[in-house]
Length: 396
Image (cartoon, rainbow, N blue to C red):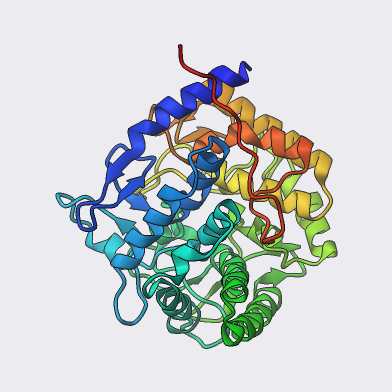
């Protein structure tokens, strides 16, 4: 791979995603040709922006745009659409918990908290986080819920989270993301001198971690499952989402070992020719085609870069550095052989979805570098190096 050429290609390709939001007049980045601003996409795409030397401007602007759509109860919609697009279902679902994690990236990049000290941004963040933790904890058991399968971001995983407005999936991925978001919020509180917020975040984090361990872990299966809010019981659908507790550092070492040995490395489950599929192979939901009732993107028999990326980081966190490097190389190879596509088939490596795609799939290029250098930009540590940027070749 000619790395300089690829970096230049990425930089040019991503400029297709530079837009201005009508309501605020602020610039933003999206990987989607239909111009919608999405939630967790902003985090993973932001890592690419930092690598390319774009700085934090678009990341902070994206957070501002989301906050500008916040209601009094803290709710923020997960998709900000252009004015001529009306999607009431997406508008009724909460933004995924990545805003504080994005701002930790910005803080490390900028070296200061000026952005958060201005206006009411920080108080709005606290309101948003409390809405996730308490208003969307239906049973009061310490786990928040997804409203639907599209809300998870894994659009057609209906076996996990149902259709629009189902409101029953206490997603293991969601609650792992929330643990990281609480931790990030605590770091922001510390930098701002908000001792009360810091103390609350520590209590929230301990309680949320315990809830995931106590309710999502299935000892017999050796896997982290979602919980059904209607019954309080685990739903035994094996999704790539089950590996999110490794990224968040929730799993014990023994649990992580079982997840890797019994599931990730099983060629009849997740270690397919081009790992890691969104669903485990070997059951009816593992399908290449859309099944009746499916909507959105294909998250069944396909490999997506963001889930591969957080599984990769989880493997490194629990000492599986060699395996993480293998996954990194395989993930980069997908982009190299099939181009930058929205997703890839787990069986053949064929590119699928948007073509070309200038969103989060570009992160695949940097995974082997991280595997070999030990660098982890997702680490929630403000003393950690801000970023490693790659100098783009100068244009003639």
